[in-house]
Length: 298
Image 1 (tube, rainbow, N blue to C red):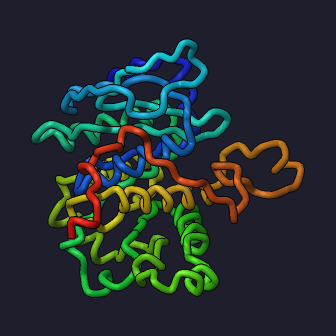
Image 2 (image 1 turned 90 degrees about the vertical axis):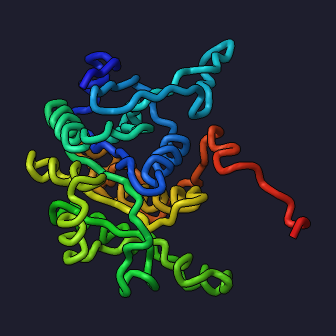
């Protein structure tokens, strides 16, 4: 892979957890990364290029940089872009174009190999899951699923699951919430369903990336949301909220001085367990699924 970020940006990846989407069903992974970048406002490090990914270009995917004077709108957006949260071992790699036809495996090997060489600590892979392929036990529970490659990450996902459950007070205040809306936390992906997915769809995202992580020994969390093609902004928001809970639960490789002084473990985001971010959609989502319509027409 060709990184246009410079050596200092690659240095910042050492020991970091990298969040990236699997470009697959309903584009939910890309939408979730958009929300996370718009919410956390990480530093833009630059573009990454791959011969295995289709080219795409746009502009102003996120809010313009307020530090620039005068404002400089029109910053180019490309197929692969790298971001880093200052002071935190957390980076985002947004992917806006799919791998070329027949290049999924090559791209997965290239990407994971590049990240391993950069010294990243692990991946959080966000993906959409085809709602049409759900089994009976998946129809009336949370539509979020996770799979972790080791016990430490699995424990973090389990802790995030507990924090993601709505309180009884919230359900009492909003009784109109459906069971699926009340269940906005991630459940562990059923092992037999993971095995079936690998057997039937091993060449489709996100599974080539999962296989490469396992082959290279790179720790990972797969976090997915069952979705149907259409207006998937809601699923993107839901997946982003679950990802924030997981990231807050993953233990930071280098805790802050305050956490060390208290003798407590610090999460990757450096937040208390009950903290929450108000999620933001980027301005580029305006008109993403067409204009709104007045309800009076019905």
